[in-house]
Image 1 (cartoon, rainbow, N blue to C red):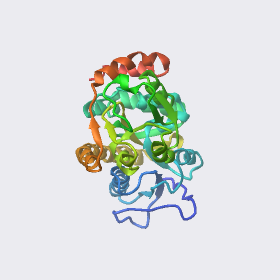
Image 2 (spheres, rainbow, N blue to C red; image 1 turned 90 degrees about the vertical axis):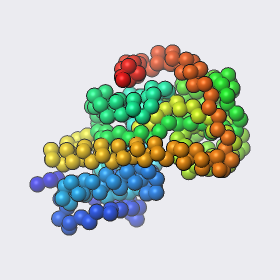
Image 3 (cartoon, rainbow, N blue to C red; image 1 turned 180 degrees about the vertical axis):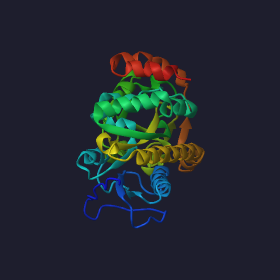
Image 4 (cartoon, rainbow, N blue to C red; image 1 turned 60 degrees about the vertical axis):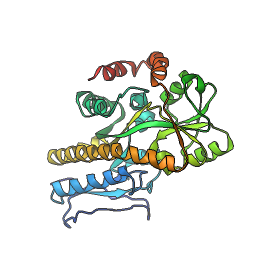
Amino acid sequence: MSICFKKHTLAGATLMLSSVALPAHSETVLQLASVETPQTVWGQVAQKFADGVAEASGGDLEIELALSGTTGSVRETLEALAIGTNDIVMTVVASLNSYDPLAAIESYPYLIRDEDHFNTVYNGEIGAELFDVLAEKTGLRLVGAGSRGPREMASTRPINSVEDLAGLKIRVPGIDVFRATWETLGASPTPMSSGEVYTGLQSGIIDAVENPLSAHIRSKYYEAADYVIMTDHVYGAYTFVFDDARFHQLSDEEQTIVNEQAKIAMEWGTEQAKAELADLEKELEGFGAEFIRPDLSEFRAKLEPMAEKFPELEPWVKKIQAAN
């Protein structure tokens, strides 16, 4: 008999979606939370994961979706894993940075070369080892990995070379690796919440922001920043996060189903995100954005010494860069 997990929800906040009809006898119910909306590729990945788990388990394992940030911010959804309000959170690996600095490896610049290298690293032996170490350090179990595609810069001024970054005020997430990246490149990184970025660009508080192209469109950066600089500096990795102890309360069969369906859903998401890139560029050009493709070898060369600033990441940087 499987363990019946909690069904705590924030009042009126849970959005339940499923296209697979589930029998009424579901023995284990898990809630999956994310700030992604159902319309995005990654919102669809969450749905595909839920549908796959339901079908593979014959309805004995059910995943309810709480999307669009209905259970809080990324940090809040992760904190809710410990108390059981959420059972799964879909987010990027680096979101665990506040639990242990090793999670910031996902945000290390020019670590992942392309989609093939991403697959070799995250869906191979290195990824399995990394996720095991993170589980030991954080108490959180990462399952599956999908590539969001590269992060690019939206800028109010043209950037044609590394030298053009001097003094550029760029918004960065609250992760030390991001700050160090742009400082090393000569820019002036400015921590800022995502909700303040648009007005920050409009008012001149910041000159630039970096994110996947899908976020450039979702947040309408093109209305405040004329240029998209194709820096390709980070390939973000989406994953499903469980409380490790609670994950191991699932039966062996249930763990196998979760692992297999997470892999299938994340691989699908990677392909969808990759196929979407060309359309996103055309869409941004249609909104008037001007694309600039600088020589990235200059960026990589200037960032080579950065690993020395992060001794806990340095061995992983070397291991990942050496992977073929």
